[in-house]
Length: 475
Image (cartoon, rainbow, N blue to C red; front, side, top):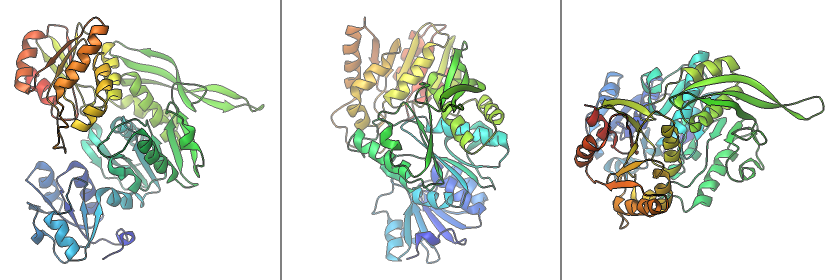
């Protein structure tokens, strides 16, 4: 069995189980560019596997032991691949080293002098994309791995040939602890993925380990609004900077905030600089006008600003990058109109994200604010039921689809009907809310086509396939 530390010393043959996934295919492309022999398997043919073939990869459709040949040095798999997968079984029988996608990404990141990992319960895709836009404006030829589709790079991956790399860092199954970077960003730390983590303290512990991984040459960027922030900053070997809304606790913070008619913020960015007496003096260092809505995106922009300032990108270039950012796929994305109704789609699937998106939407021109929400996973819905109900109550009218199970098979005895009841309880206290449970998309579309009126704003929301509702209505 080969040592994992040897993997990047010279090109070899690496096999990906589930190579057609958006994250796995990105790693495969990077390694193809570096001269590696790449093979992989997936359940079916797709544009992603077709592209990999054109780049020189060998793709097998179906997972079979025969796909694992003796010349393979390493097999890469994701957490979704079960231990009895025939390719993993065959690889272990042949004494071939098997590693997770996160470990593979970590080994790739180790080759870059400036490697940035963006972590947090939410906001990762947007902030990673903002940092990417800034690096592109700086013309430093970065390698970019982002969890959404960024129009500027024509997808979720850009292969650069410099010492700069930026990627999202997901906390689920603690995969972000396998990444190897010298700048770590923590946007927020909230309850989520409770099918893996025991509770919020378990989650905070993982983010603490993520922060502590940085050595004396590293930098931690974190939100000053995180509960008990000293828990994350105490005993750090690295330096750190904070961003947030509070001038007293933030190294980077906004003032003179205004919003345009589409809820996009313009603001000054300030930092505290010590004067000759050692007192901190607030100094305005930049002015930014964003093209994406909401206070949450202002915070994401502050995080991106602090990160890029840490790697000495000039302020004027940072502003240029932030002001050129127009959003990513499924983040408050305009989809079109039907019968005078504006349709927006958003990936929000955690109560904090829902609050941020609906708060932004309330400042967007509209008569009635409709939210079609598809809960994502039974464990998340059950654990955060009351939080979901409060967040969704920011909309005027709410339509619930059935729960999108993702990887889960146990319903835990709940459905979206439970969430509807929870919202209705809150509605009794707050002058009532219109809330409907329509399990299937077809009935939701028929309902909305007659109930929405000219001037309404409709947001489809969730991490599943609820985007189809709005797209079908627009069609």
